[in-house]
Length: 189
Image 1 (spheres, rainbow, N blue to C red):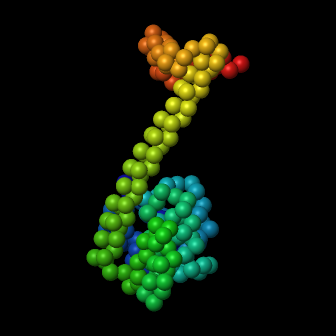
Image 2 (image 1 turned 135 degrees about the vertical axis):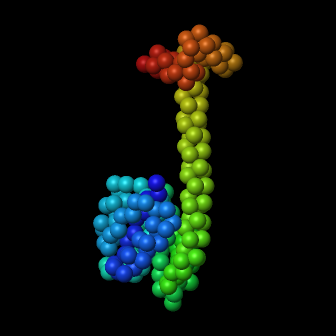
């Protein structure tokens, strides 16, 4: 179930874009005309797509789109008047915001959203892999700290400390990380 947030000050624009988003498979669409409300919605929920129909009544939408691109994992699209599209594209491309010029072509809109879906999927995979690696590094730090304590408190060599952690993990049927945490609790106090 794909979720979208649409920020638009124009009722006609909101209606048109809501229909286009529904045709693209977005079944949950939250619509607001206010940047402040949109920030609250994003703070309370995660959206696959954030679509800003610029300009907004209170601002041009550029800063809002940049904010969402930097603080969320959502795909961010801003729809701008044709005359400003190239300039705004130059400002926002480096932030990962896709700029679409008005009037919106239904066929191109479909392809733009397919692109954002593909990009978001890849980004989420990279983020997930990055998180796994971060956990592995944290686990290695704990294990190395336990080895250091075994070396300094029990005069073991690094090889002996490594073997000790592995053997204890096998004997206790626990992970090496859990054994390392036990060693740290025992010898760090």
